[in-house]
Length: 90
Image (cartoon, rainbow, N blue to C red):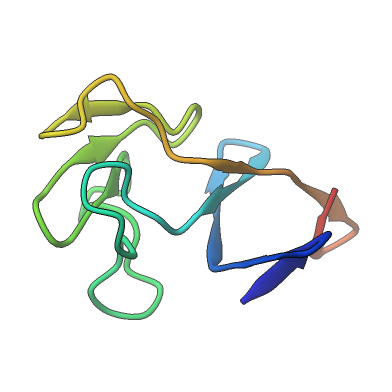
């Protein structure tokens, strides 16, 4: 759980190439967390973020849903950055 100002939320981080991107762990279609198991946000091939509940696929670089009931919608961005080896909220 993370805090941004007064808001509390669940979030996750993905490494995409040399970038680190943070997203709010909330499916835009159903409203529940994406991962059915802890830290299971990516497909087996590691090229997409997946909602374990209904299989929607999201582009890791943008959070945009490319397949599934929320196609065209996007995950909420959570601004993060690298500070040496650590990921911190931006």
